[in-house]
Length: 393
Image (cartoon, rainbow, N blue to C red; front, side, top):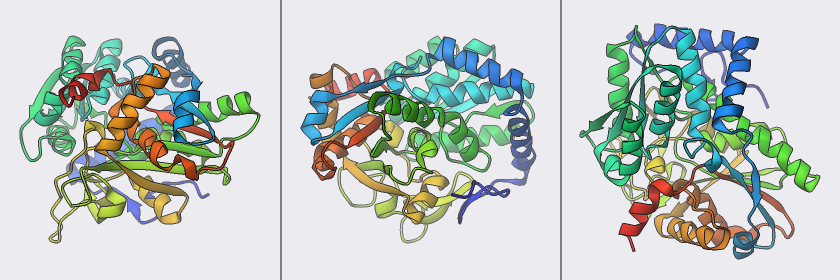
């Protein structure tokens, strides 16, 4: 498969840079710094040292025998990103971008967050590296993720409530982009997913690809073979592309991404971009977008704040068009069932985001061949979601 994105930041017809002219120099500066630093041995040593000694990489794979038996007749392994410091995969990218920002002499960091995990990861990276941190978060997400809001503030970050629009992730990104334009010389925006204008989808993917690189080596060591199936939830798409990227050249591996099916198929009731979206531009990139007949961005819904977003990373849109990755959706109800079943059978409480991939396996796992090796990315732990699930009891 051809290395992408191309020099203009496109994955086929998806991607690009749809931003005000005032941001172009900053994006070029970021890309130039990244391309230089990824070849810099001292930068790599510093990043690898922090990932190992601070974050806790490599994360293990855990065979989920009892939960797997509920899903089908295959071996199920969980890639345990929930065991990272801060409790999710988001720290991989936050540390990487914060190190770049410091090398670029940017002392102020801004970020957006939905489920709060990227905000916590960014606040953590800033505390570690001595950087100022401001996190934008929709008021709806703040209400359902109170614990993470407190964690961010405890770590020294300023959390700015966003009261416009749907008051969720989309609107938090809007506010972060406005801040970025206003403070372009002093501030770096650590975008948390494979979204936004080039070079963000490429850089976030590269920092998250450690997930799949580790998983391949670990599964080979445990089973003496490649996995047959790799599955992950897909919001913007960072944890899933992190799992998939190193597996793309291995044509025998079936790759499955699971979106938020929400409450139903009607526009506004879900966040399933491939079953209900159309080509459009949002937050600086061209991808699949949930929009109405007039091209206005649609409201979305998901029980999980991290999947509650109307667009998807452009590389995912490209992979779906190529047919290399299959994308399905999982309802709120089924994700909740998987949340409870994994907790009860394995003693592992998953993030509601990750529970969508597990929910798909609960419903569809019988279609996977007997004795297959399946790896599911457990992108985060569910501590943050326990109060929300309690309220639904």
